[in-house]
Length: 423
Image 1 (spheres, helix red, strand yellow):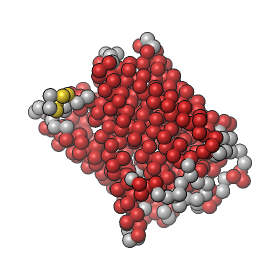
Image 2: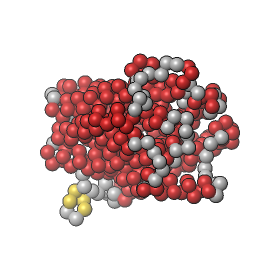
Image 3: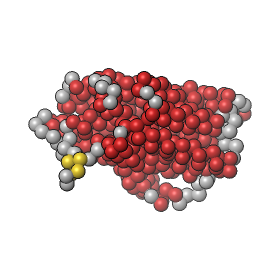
């Protein structure tokens, strides 16, 4: 891990690291409880809960398109980040302590919060480095570890509090996490970020990034790559719906007389990210020295192939679950493969957007990246909602096939996309 921090990065990176860590703590802590809360507390069917989950997580990734546009043209990224932190805290505390009739209003506030926050904090990180692209991959890997550090601890903290004291305390702890992140941000933003992202970009003369990186042809190639992330997110976001229900109802969670809370399984992915990200970085560096490092496009293809493999594992796990409760190792190994897949796609994609996006549309372009997450999450929730009507094998097999077909198509396009991107 220390290898990632050895490079001479701006101190603002580490502020954004911790702010994003706490924001993701709040989001993933809430997400780990959301489906179970709807099924067990609001008495929704799995289908209804899955649909609401899909719409919610989808809109979380759609609204950054709006938030990015508002930041680029009117408010600047930094003001939008502040607004996002306030709205997120408010939504979580309403979810925790307000009447259940305000459930959808709380979700609405958190959707707006993510719209203000998500694309803009990634854009500020890119702005810290200006036109120096040499350290951006490393910077976004460090940043991505902050995301997953928060995601690792949140299900453990929020999930434990929800089991011991009720869902409201799980949601409240997520809200407190967001307040901590907002407090840190407001104390240090001016000192460590300077004027980066403080004001909207309105001058065309500031838009050198696109011209120097190949113009519209590269942006088109970037959009094509974004389309291939949709099947990835459809599969990946089963973690909060069908895979959570599989852990709750079909997995033997007893260990030495202790029943493992279902929410703990949500910590597997971020734990593996924290563990594997430094190793992946070392691997890429080793391959780079031998001139054998995969291109960004090739890494995307590897990600889709590995995602397919993770659901092949779950097909076998689902088959075993037809007889009796299954070992949690099925989920552990599936999440492990899924995590390597994620490391080949998500931080690489964020870095690519930062490198190729026109400066005055940076947050808007980052919002377009998250738009693919919206589409993927929407269909993920729809498909995960079929948990009650399909067997696990019927549920997981189409996901394995979807990822594999996307892999094959991208494989055909690799030479053309590599030629355009040249990176």
